[in-house]
Image (cartoon, rainbow, N blue to C red):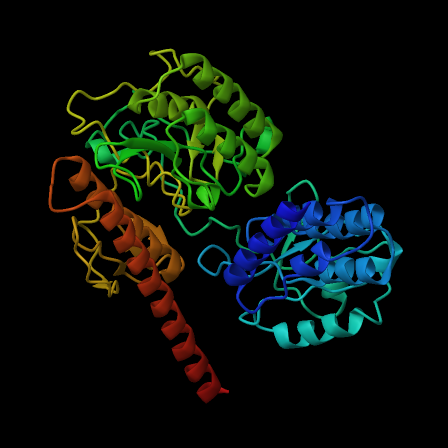
Length: 481
């Protein structure tokens, strides 16, 4: 009991650090006196993931119901449950431009929690009015009979959100269509060179890794019963010399930033495959077909019993077999080929010229920018201005972000983006990939941890650049109005 309370307090501290000034009610939930011993701490620990940017916004409403159902309706439990319903969900401006709001009219189910409006990020236009209304609804809730949170916001004049249903689908309200989390990258045309290359540009084998051309989806990810990994790409890599490891000690780790948050690397691949499959449910918003694929691949990797690069390759081949990772977020249907990780005819053939064992794995598959199958598009034709201001060059030169104008003005290595932030982050990811290639290819002057540190510096530079652009836009807007 005591250790569990300490753990939740630690997790709450992490959440407070992650969410900054946002209202995170984790401590209030943990302090509720009702329920069985340790139950409040258990619910509090689980509630942290409900406030992550990738979480389904309906989850925190259901969590509010759980607090009252399992911890009782004492004053402390009611306050904690209301705080959970009202809490601002973390917001990632690099991935989306507006908050996610639940469209399920049945949530929250408890009448005590009905009619409470959630807080939204202050960076969103119109947030002042919404947050003022949110504060009022804690004591004077709105009439929510037959209405979802999304309906209540719409009725009060706020429509700049992404409506998400309880099953992860959306939008389900009559507000303007919102950009999906990974719509910044142009879907590349199918061609013989794209194949099903798993974005494995580390081994200089971009051309025809799989002779069958990858047909691009014509419907949203997850349609027609296809596999949809949601916000994540469920691959892993096998890399030597990670922080805290010996230079010649290789470990497994998810490549996807969202999937690996809070996860340490491991010598045992089964730890990582289990983490990936768990995250598909916890934060990735994957569909059932994707979860089933993941568990099937997990069983097959455990049966293999290997702990080397071939293990990571077999896993990646298995989870991505027959799907186009990246084009529509997590994955979209490509063909009807069944998963078959150990069938050499079904998986992409390895390249004997693949450098030093492709130590960085498929690191860029899961960068969230949705450009997995566009490796062969040349950037030579772009004539725009390089707007990437990062100058770090450890192991690899900075990758230009070309502003060429038009509807998708920002181009990185042939991939086009609507938003500068997403393009800038893509530039950092590509540079990190090149740096890791150098580190794993025998360059004694650079290490993988140095590459990762440089990537972090590059990402922070992107965030600073985005903030400056937004401030400049606001100044111009105010002058015009």
